[in-house]
Image 1 (tube, rainbow, N blue to C red):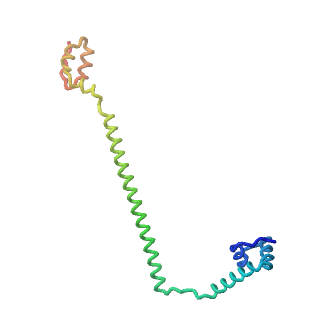
Image 2: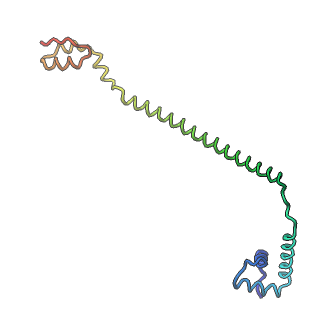
Length: 154
């Protein structure tokens, strides 16, 4: 004997959604199985009852109110999404600005003159020029010393 089909299979059989060998098996089973035949007749009666029932109709005003509520809900969702997106954009902008300021300060620090250059500029260059042994050394040191425009060669 063929096992009883499930309620979903009986419903699909009643709606004509089963094909092939399974259709033949269910047809033979329903013909000999009284509980399955009763379930199939109950499903058919329920389908007829639902088909004959009056469908509720919305008035034009009720449809208009429904559409307004749906539009309002959609608009609120879009506004909330927009605020979230603008908050994220502002955060990215602030973090990027802070990062650029940090990178710029690191670059400026790297471009600053090394500390040993300030030492040579602040020393007494005239004494060095005066102690130069050759005229070439005197010219070189005179050019390197700040503010020494009067150069006397030995």
